[in-house]
Structure formats: structure tokens, C-alpha cells
Length: 245
Image (tube, rainbow, N blue to C red; front, side):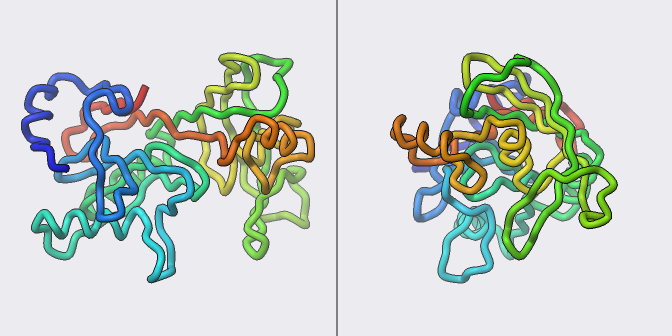
């Protein structure tokens, strides 16, 4: 399916706040994996399905970056440049921002490192929070060999590579959270919520026996974590973009 994006954006040029899939949804790539939410000459944003890797070292597996490069090549772009800005874990669904040139990548990467890109998530978790709104601040240590992260005590000499992890949460209904991610650590949301007794439903890595049982009883077949909104300044125009609900 093909849509003339220039016609869409001409009508919407004065509006930079869009709800996810409210304006349009376009399938990207031959395998129809990713939905394109926004595109211009500097950036592209997709709605990544759960289970699809953003990038993989395997030449036999399709990922978001290879599919976007294929898509751009079909549009006539020679040697397309694609850099992921807010990487999502493979089981996580939702909005992923890509830069389409080195200048945009440098600016957006700097913005991400310095907290100028706001990232919002929805999560369904086991149990209900006593504190319906708050901030979780921990130190996370990544075990690369096991591909897991864990909450550790600050200053522990055994985990000197631990990094501070911060998120804000608000319980919008029992067991459903709206999350603003302040830092971006490995498996951060999953680990921090599990550490306070509320693992995300569908999380087989960090879930408890109780949360896994609830996952099974509710017929949930994937991790209940979605990146639903990004707020940032365009790397070239400097105008604020609010993409998502």
C-alpha cells in the first residue's frame, strides 16, 4: 500500500500532536512487519510489533533496520542510513524513532543522553500498587552473559558497573500503569517493576510464579509493555513533535 506522505503532511503541517494510528498507518517492508507513523527526510517513526527485533546480527532474521533500509532503497535512496534512537527490547511493542542521516542521529542521540526525549509506556502488571503514583529509583547491574539485569545496592563493590535507573509511574486503573521513563537501562522497566513485587504480565524472564499464573489464566501471550508516546524536538526544524496518544 502506498500513500503520498507529502499530501498528508501538507494538510497537517500546523499540527505536531497526533494520536497513534489516528492519521495513517502504513505497512513498511516486504514482510509487512512495521507500521510507519511518521516520516520526513531526517527521521522515521514506526509502531514496532512485539517479537520483532529492532536490530539483529543474524543475516537470516529480518529486523526493523533491515526492513527500513529495504523500504528506503525501493524509494530510490542510495546507501540508506538508518540509526535507531530509542531502542526497544524484542518483546516490547510500540514507537521506535530512527534517524535517517548522521546529523540527525548525532542531534537525537545527544538529546536522548541528556534527557530531552520524553518516553512514555503502558504496562499491565501483577497486583495493585499501594502508592498509586510515584518514582522508582534503583541501581541496575547488567549481566551481559546471562542477558539479565538486577537491582543492586548502591556502592556495592561487587557491582561497580551498576547504573542509576529512574522511572515515574501512575496507576491509571488496577494493575495498569502509565510510565514515564527517565533513564534508559537494559530491561529497566521490567526489572524495576518486578523488584517491587509487580512484574509485568507476560514477562517470563522477570516474572514470579504468581504473575506467570495470572498471565496464563488471562490468556496473555506476550509481554504487556508498550511504548505509546514520544515527545522531542525535530533535529532540523527544532519544532516539538508529540507522537502518540
